[in-house]
Length: 215
Ligand SMILES: C[S@@+](CC[C@H](N)C(=O)[O-])C[C@H]1O[C@@H](n2cnc3c(N)ncnc32)[C@H](O)[C@@H]1O
Picture 1 (cartoon, helix red, strand yellow):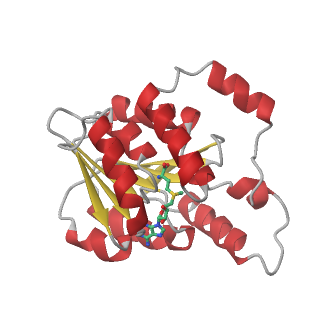
Picture 2 (spheres, helix red, strand yellow):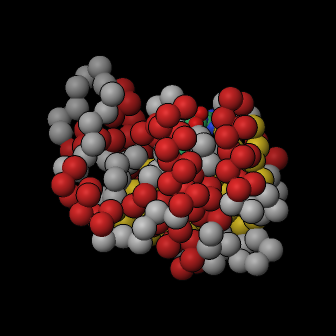
């Protein structure tokens, strides 16, 4: 079990000074915590409102999310879509499908959110869509693969968000030789930092959110 990066006091202050979590998302948050394994995977109130804010700033026509889980971030991101826009979200675990579809329906977003059940590595190549905004939040070992699959296909000025890049703060300390996951995340962050095709900023939001703009 990973520890939160920030103190509960700071987290509470951030939440208290962020627009309230919409009631539907609060219900999804509660249901995920009571019925689904690993509820810490859900983006949650503060990060969810940030994703919604970013989406409203960009007003994307097409969004891709890799790693749906229970659909919380998908709904947040879809809030900022242009009229007639779509969000494609990919989830490998079919057990998540019913809760995701239930809450997409409650959010009246069935027309704009398309859930794909399967492995993102196989589904991404079948999506012949020019995405304006991508949220990478699935199996962290494949972060670089997803990034390299998608970046060449994005137009200049498109954005990518990548979650958990601070990896509970483990990237900040001396990494243990047998801790492959942290080594992987550190190498990925370094690769982004050296990539001249993008501008990037690492935000200390929740577990660390990398924000990239394709030049
Ligand atoms: C951190 S959760 C996503 C949380 C969600 N984005 C949110 O913020 O509410 C990661 C999800 O990625 C899914 N996943 C892992 N590997 C995947 C793959 N290869 N293709 C698609 N989904 C995958 C997991 O089953 C899990 O539900």
